[in-house]
Length: 420
View 1 (tube, rainbow, N blue to C red):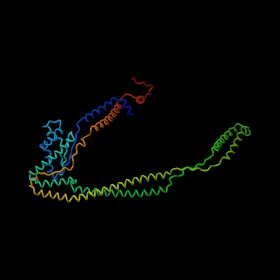
View 2 (cartoon, one colour; view 1 turned 60 degrees about the vertical axis):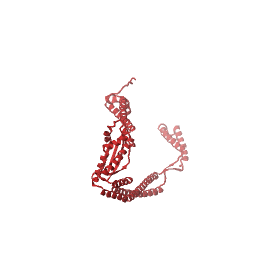
View 3 (tube, one colour; view 1 turned 45 degrees about the horizontal axis):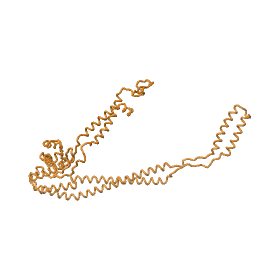
View 4 (cartoon, rainbow, N blue to C red; view 1 turned 120 degrees about the vertical axis):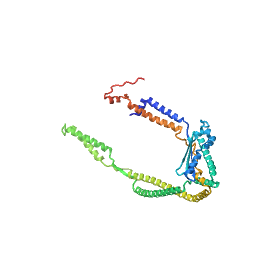
């Protein structure tokens, strides 16, 4: 099956398919681009009730109205002012972790900068609202400050769960040390192989003798060829004439002269030796280079594993230093919680801190316009080839004389060109 011929034969179908794909891609690319801003919020104390309380604050309509008063016209430019509060919750996503220690907050819209600003305003309003409600239910300023300090310390040093992080670091440190040991063993084996190859290469000659030939005189070779011809001619004449005939005597005289010449020229010239590269030496050099490259790679892996193990050990030492400060902050929060009324604890209210910065405007949701058009071109080209192949398979027309002969079993005597 010749694809270029099929494409030419069904060029109208191919062009129609390709144009249709480009039009569909252009329609998709013409749609407004959707951007997403998202962040992670650390809840303190980590309880499901606290996470639900903060989620309720983030979903409150009056807080949404405050945000929309600031960025509503840029976030939803095509909607009326009274419709924006109804549309905002559909673009807002708040997800809590099972243990209530983390909230994932995301917001989508057609303007990346407006989405990021709206999410920042939402978090700012939620923080202020949380403090007001917490204080109204009996929470003291001391407890709020203690929780704020704890959340800030965790955010600054990336300490979400110290125990889990230490366990993960210890496990990774063990894996790095095992990788160092394995790489060092492999490097030692390669070093031994490299030494053996160097010894064998030094004992193997770089060149060897390939052939010996004797140089003979070209005159002697020509004389022998002539002598063979005269012997054949003598045998032929003896079948027709007597041995003492003139023709036979002349041939024998020529034979005698050539034999005399050969007796003088038939000497062997000194031998000439031909040498060349030793294949065994070349194989050893190739193996030596490959072993050196492998050893260099393994040594680099050893250094990388050592650096990783060293960095993990430094991180563990740093965590050990932070552990004391973290414990003091947790104890301060615990003492402050004991001084507030139980009603504030039962409501599940908590302080929170942002542990992941906003990410908006840097990555759109879905494919960009350029990617959509590229996919349209690629998909359209593939679909065009498939359409041409399918049309050729379903077509009952003959395109070449060979198809006529193969289908009908009859020879083609002549062809007529199509009139333009």
